[in-house]
Amino acid sequence: MRGDKEPMFVKSHDIHLDEEYVHWIADIKHRYRSAQVKAALKVNSEKLLFNWQLGRDLVQKKAEERWGAGVVEQVSLDLKREFPDADGFSTSNLWYMKKWYLFYTQTEHAILHQTGAELQMLEKQHAAKLHQVGGVLYSEKLHQVGGEIQSSDNQRGLKLQQAVGETQRLVSKTDEEIGMAFPQPFALVPWRHHVEIITKCKSIDEALFYVDKTIEQGLSRNALINCIKANLYEHQGKIVNNFTDHMPALQSKLVQEVLKENYNFGFATVEHEIYNEAELEQALTKNVTDLLLEMGTGFAFLGRQKELIVGGRSRKIDLLFYHIRLRCYIVCELKAKPFEPEFAGKLNYYVNAVDELLKSDEDNPTIGLLVCSDMEKIDVQWSFKGINTPVGVATYNNVKIKDALPSQEQLAERVQLVQKELKEAKRLKQ
Image (cartoon, rainbow, N blue to C red):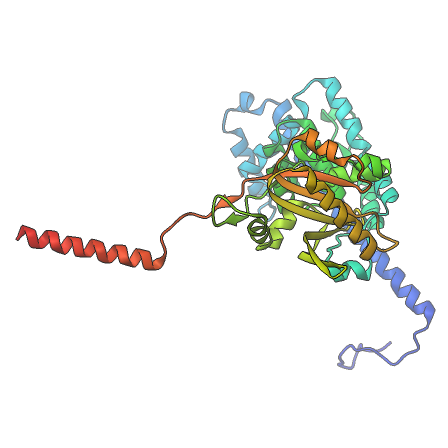
């Protein structure tokens, strides 16, 4: 045994490392990562179950009626005094625990049991969905286009299985003992995400939609907030499209979940109230981060004004994306005006061009997305007839107009004029 007596720096040694050693080290690393996931999930599950049960206690015991209006503040003080190093015992956090429990239990009992059943099926549905569409890609191509990969299917599946197993143990008590049982998939969602959901959603259906999205796409808290602000629950899946005619049923459903009916371009500012597509495009791409947040999770930005040359003639695609989860290119055309039927033909042309020149055998068919200021659905639907590529039409709103403030030179001139007028007024008084 070395190193017990002699001082030394730890370093790599010149030893024989064979294939068996490499596999062994890889297995150790895998087991450690698995242990990390289990530990994190266990801690999260335990804390969330505690929050759920404390919220239940405040409701079932009718604490404020029994001990007075300040009882929540008193509970907060008692817990912080007993556990000074722990976080999460603020008065506001305790109120959120009560609100969390109430949010999911204030409807009819039958609906609650149905909701619980739907939640417990979540992990199975999600795992099956990811398996069928091929999950997240780990290819050099996506690294080149700037795709950002959060986790692999296996990792997500592992988290789901471990969370379900852990929460099954935690919620084994009967309904009579703990009230409404803690829904198992809730353990996959961080506490602050739950707070955002229950404070911003108007119904259980809407809340469960965002719970599902958080689990399915690994949404950060900011990404979740942006989804709620954009009212994804109302807009997602309602885009006018022909996807069902040109895609397998599952892929069509996934695409409709990804693309929105309306895009909130409130982060973009144009110079004048009347603007064209080029000005809109420039305003949108000035901050690509905000654009990608509004487009949704999984979008990788490949560029604007992507040039296409056919027969010596140059044409340009407004915006080109690659979607990691859908495994396909998305051609996006912008129109700062209401929909016109000829827009569909141009979009179809660009989709075909990308399929011919950029799409690989591993990619799914390219999707066309036209975003315009307004549309008549019948116009769009008739325009889709005869088009054999998957395309959809959405609208946008909330583009800001730059304030018409005077320039620095104009302000200086006005100041000089006012000073001159004041001097003249003073002279006249004398």
